[in-house]
Image (cartoon, rainbow, N blue to C red):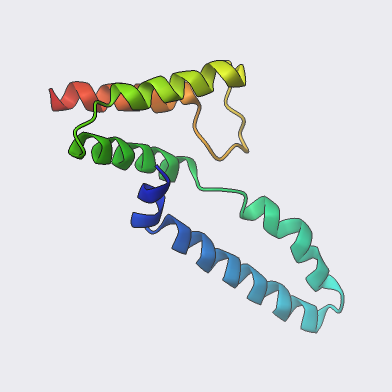
Length: 118
């Protein structure tokens, strides 16, 4: 999954956005002295994680890598099921600000991909 983020360029997208945010606050600080400090409040909220579509894409690629290595996607599903159970996640609950889709949504995507490939 994390290798899929790297191969998809998701880390570079975040790095670019982080750099642009820093530049923007530096410029703002020139015109409004002291405003640059607000970067420390705003940037973590903006750069908190990958987007939901990026997470789903990384899952999709992760399953593809597992399959190419000769493993079944059922292991990925089992891992997500363990995460779902241990987090106490309620399937209908998705926080608007959360970066990850629900584990249920991730599992459904993998099941649908598996069925489409069969």
